[in-house]
Image (cartoon, rainbow, N blue to C red; front, top):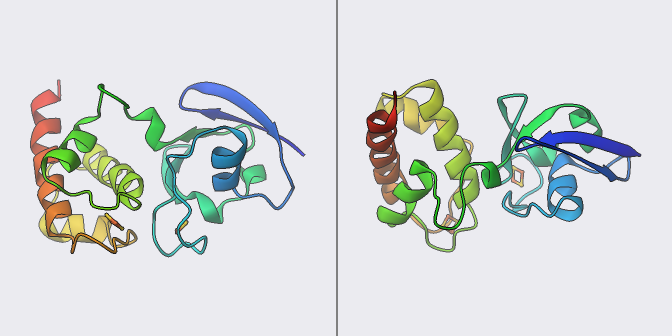
Length: 157
Ligand code: FES
Ligand code: FES
């Protein structure tokens, strides 16, 4: 079936199997491998994207459900030398080890800080409770969140 989505501001389309997930569409048809496939069960958050502005696990959404809708992925935040403040904060805080969880955390932290520029620690823990990291022990990820929050407040108009 033909699916058309607006991804990171650009309309793209692909011919997918009706049971294909949005994650599969992004990674295998649209050459957007930033969203990771770690569990495919909605348990780890590695595949997090925005669908019409709402954070979702793209492994749990059918590609067909995203038809004619807006998807924002980690690739839409920044790349290369033009990093998003949250991406910069993860690098500077040393919050990346194997990096497999990092795109999902970056998306979840960005979502949180766009909604709440001054979150409480409990709010941060709640917002990130759907994201699993097997390497860092989370302390440096929390450091990255506070650093990113400072940076994003500085950049706010
Ligand atoms: S791959 Fe989607 S939640 Fe783990
Ligand atoms: S850095 Fe390896 S899973 Fe998080």
